[in-house]
Length: 120
Image (cartoon, rainbow, N blue to C red; front, side, top):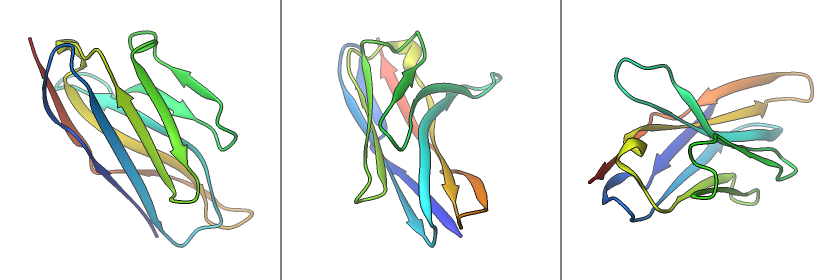
């Protein structure tokens, strides 16, 4: 079983910064892509940023130039540096990882979520 544990959420003023972390633990062969998603009440979960095992990245248009995703493969951890925060960034943020449990079995995992609130 693989467990993803997020940290770093909280309350920040508009224009401020927060850094989210997500550490994966458990027994697995390899972690492939890792990403951050967010969700607000009544809306679908949306992709914020994703990073592949080769460190290629992709971002939602709404966060380009403000958020940076990175990963430390030695620590099985993905980060989301969020700068120039806006009230519309307020959401529950979820970590996601595509994990190869073995060389032939891949599973998708989610963290429990961390709340980010940006005040105006």
